[in-house]
Length: 287
Image (cartoon, rainbow, N blue to C red):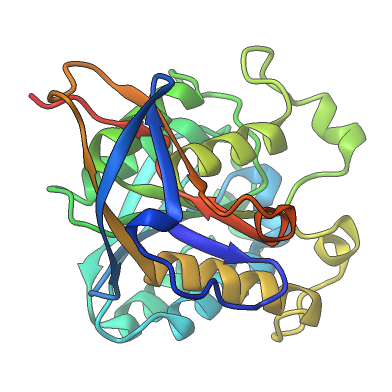
């Protein structure tokens, strides 16, 4: 579980009794709460489809910013996707290798590969990215930089979400979307609005998504992260690196995926408005 403070103030004196939990409307006990700041593993996925090529400089700038702000103890992997997923760097603590890999993610401008149309299989890439991380570890995350388009996935976002939840992997994203008029002509009818799907997917898995304004997306990237993005980016990185581990007492081991809810026990509306909890919304079944 991660705690978002919208005004930057800390949630003081929290313990197991600071939160209420329920499974299928029945209250369950939180037996312990502990801060976890251990090493993390993050798979960085970058959209290289034709629709995203004009955002390539900004995408690489944002990816480099993520690498620069993660602790040196964190492992990072790198992959790109358009019509299919292309693994580039296996998870490593050598962040310089990730930075080198970023330089070859997009094809050179003017090359024949630069104009090929491969479609976009966003949710297939997220789903297959789960497998690139191998055996799951506490704190694993997939971080995707994309325009949110999906034109060729064989499965919808729900399959990707289920795969993430099954391994306890959180999804975080930066979605640099098209202008609404263009985006509306490219939507997959089974998915609906791409921004809504990314909001849903990141929230469902306990992650976080950033949606830069259209003005920022349209301005050529000059090598410096826009000041308007600094605060949300820092928040996103903080949520990936720092979170709490809760032990929840269930009456029996789940045989199927169980939805659950977590909330602050403090009844004050000011507290509830200022703090938001981010956590995976389902318990995976015990096999």
